[in-house]
Image (tube, rainbow, N blue to C red; front, side, top):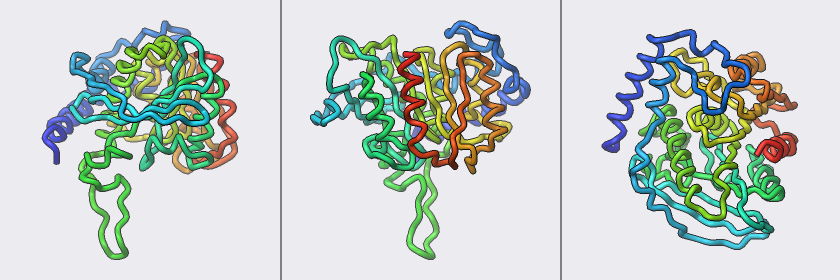
Length: 317
């Protein structure tokens, strides 16, 4: 296990215990109607939670472009920058083919066992390429990172995939990072991505949105809740998290979304989140500018949701 993983894991355990001890009711307390976007729930529990997702902005980003590829939809750059733990974080930044002046940008958050590349492939499990193409067509830049231990970052888990399945009769290899650590670190990495985008002269850093699917849907909740620079968001197929001591459950941060436009897209027969649980999380946002939309489908909704998601971000960014 890497040197930073042990102290990070210990700190998260302590925060989980404190969070539950301070308030077991904060999850179900609705946010005020139409609060300012900068407002945060004034509870000890939430202040502790913010510390879990905090980072030192003075840590050098050392961001740079390592590859440029001209594609039909527009220039794609491969970016690397240093995350808060020192690892390089890789991502793809793509600009719309026709652009004048500053452009808004949407962060793209992939699912568990996926990668940033899933947004460059059409009609896959998360309809990632469909979402990316739709946003580029509407004039958005897009920026997708590999979550911790995923994609180009598999070396952080000693090249073991997060969902390992070996040959028949061979036990699966245990990963070195828990789901909670991956979610927390990836959320912090996307906060660092916002720091990077602020330095890009082509991007309007006042118009940043987020789109995430499955694991990325949960992380979209987390990122929007702790990061006021996200101005509008879409969370798709967000799994239920019913663990009472969870630090990564969407309900923990939903009230902090405040008055920012937030769209939840769910499959009506999602095996990972029943409609009543999706509705409970949605109600915890407590804002008239939030919307819950059910589509026919399971956890794999299919591409029918894409026009609604793109239209939501176009309207609200």
